[in-house]
Image (tube, rainbow, N blue to C red; front, side, top):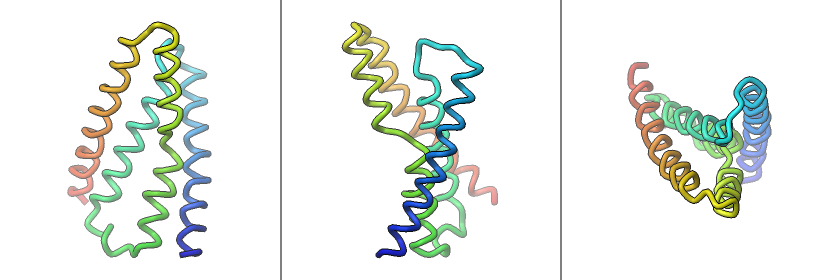
Length: 124
């Protein structure tokens, strides 16, 4: 159990660093009133976890490596708390339509990204 906790922590550390880097680059080059960086990171994280979990070798990686990649790396890369916080802000700012579109769009895009990731993984 301790080994798995350490691996998940390491994966989360690297996932968080990559999330920060991607969010920084998106924010630097794309100006948007919509939280585009969080949306892209979360959908990309769904695509990655779908791809990784859909790989034929995934089951043979062992529990520790699967946890490192999914709960660790992908969990650290995506950000549910920021997503929720941004939606609360939209509601407080009187923009419920934006919040609802963001919520629905994120769920639909995330679902499709996992499915697409799994389909891509089948090609390997």
